[in-house]
Amino acid sequence: MYSLVATETIITEPIHVVVYHNVVSKAEAEQLVKISMPRLKPAVVVDPETGEQVLASYRTSKVAWLSEMEDSSGTVARVNNRLSSLTGMDFGSAEDLQINRYDKFAGRYEPHFDWQRYENKAKGNRIATFLLYLSDVEPGAGGGTVFTRANTVIPVMPYSAVFWYNLLPDGKPDVNTQHGGCPVYSDASEKWVANKWLHEKGNTFRWTEQDDPLS
Image 1 (spheres, rainbow, N blue to C red):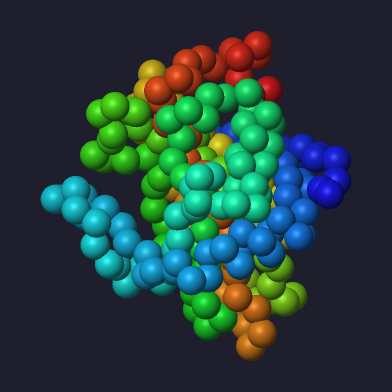
Image 2 (tube, rainbow, N blue to C red; image 1 turned 120 degrees about the vertical axis):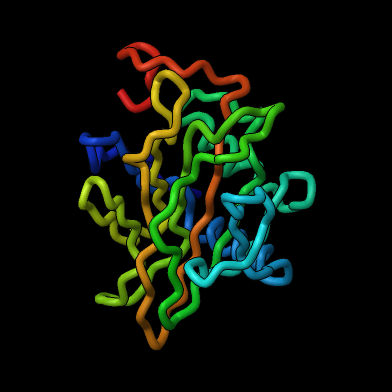
């Protein structure tokens, strides 16, 4: 069973980023990794010119997409429900859980944005991101998440989830959300993370003390 979730504000300017600690248990994280192993494929990115998914040298992870329907253990559903309860946001238009494995030697994802140039017409753009650390790395091996415009690196914190908005209150992309997965330099540690992207459909984007899940 996972422990009581604790909230920590990491960045306030120029964006608001929080970390929810103890979001998943070690057993749940290991189960997500286990389910993902036979499904892993090289990660792709969206070509900004064509909108097509392509391989890119600046993203070296392997990924697997996990839906609740394909997981008989119920782990994916429990994690999704727990994330939803943290913010109160609507997960009806959210993407499936994406699991990423970064290799031991220089596994990385260079600075990028999660909002989409070619947004989903039915669901809208990616309004917010959850990034879960599913594993630890050895001391000094890197692997943190850097927010370039805030000049801040969030280190690997096993079983915790980082959360931020990708869009401004008017729905336009927020360039201050540029972030990257720092290289992993290790003889022993792979880095495993999970991404959960929420879309605009079903979520009213209002920056008020009452309605902002980060307040």
